[in-house]
Length: 254
Image (tube, rainbow, N blue to C red):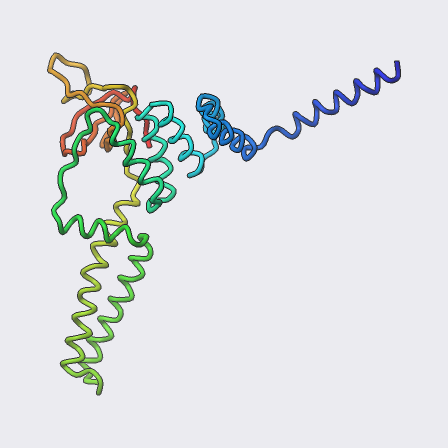
């Protein structure tokens, strides 16, 4: 009798410890990764989504979730979580490559309006550094330009016309590169709302209600910018510059 009582107390203690110290998010994440590596994508998805439902967020979690959806053939959800991962690290080449790969799977991808070469140049430039780095560089160049101008006006010995022209040209080119790059980098880091189409196709109308007009059909995986929200509808901007209204249902906000 005493043996059974002792065993019962030990068993109860184990249960209590299990409740007091539940499985950690790190452990759950490792288990999900293990399922993924074994090719059990459904079990991996269940674990990853469980972590998301508990409020956990990270670049690694979203990236792995995106890859899992990719293996399961769900392009829209895959792009959604890969884009969420990219918000944590915009210059991550692995995430960027995964997004490019998923975009190739979109059945009817909306083509982006080609950028004028000068805008493309500055967009590429803005991605080299973060917004605060560009801001600091811009301020330093501006201060140096003021110092150069003051030196020339006060006619310091080294501030000859030739030296001033050379230094001024370098500073001018630096500011020409830094100012637009700072502005574009700041716009990129602004809280721009975007969504991914998750349904196989959704309809876009000119007003926030279904009408008899023939709607534009948008395929899963396309990324749209959200301009306005009204009771279950998004007014969106398409990559080709067109705007319209779609229902929230069937989309996922990044």
